[in-house]
Image (cartoon, rainbow, N blue to C red; front, top):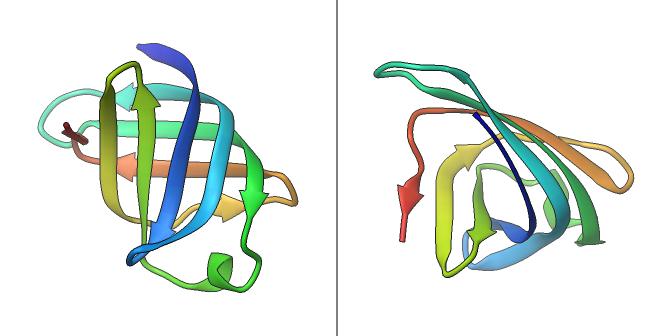
Length: 91
């Protein structure tokens, strides 16, 4: 499964650290420990808070939000890559 979208946030606590632009989410493993790989463009980055952990990831999908807690992304200058284990909280 591969999904492409635009928009989302990465936060530490209540503080938004990154605002996401275009992203691609791929489910790389199935079963009770589903694994997802994300690549994304970052539109806004708070360089101070982007060094803090743990982070929460929220991807906007229409009128829904897919959310993972305790994400440890690899950050480039204007990009993000992350692997999430387990199903997202969808709300």
